[in-house]
Length: 119
Image 1 (cartoon, helix red, strand yellow):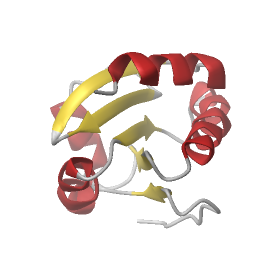
Image 2 (spheres, helix red, strand yellow; image 1 turned 180 degrees about the vertical axis):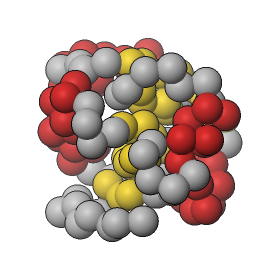
Image 3 (cartoon, helix red, strand yellow; image 1 turned 45 degrees about the vertical axis):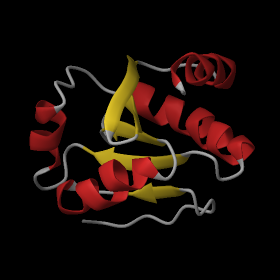
């Protein structure tokens, strides 16, 4: 898998092999947002800067895992979570899905959504 660098250490690329450890297991320590995205998806690229800004503002309280669905077995993982469109963002906390949204959203909308879903 092609690894892209992210200036924020709380934003990282993941894949099917690392998902259990980097998302599910890690969500017991801190919430993890997973961005299911594709390179060909315009709304995915529009959403990314808003997600990264939210994570930056959270100052380490939440992580963002970027999962490109067109890489390797990642589409199978998207299917496992019944992702039907891109982008889809799923919040994991304590090993479980806490909420999801699809499509591009503003930073303000993402922050409101997080407040509703974090426990």
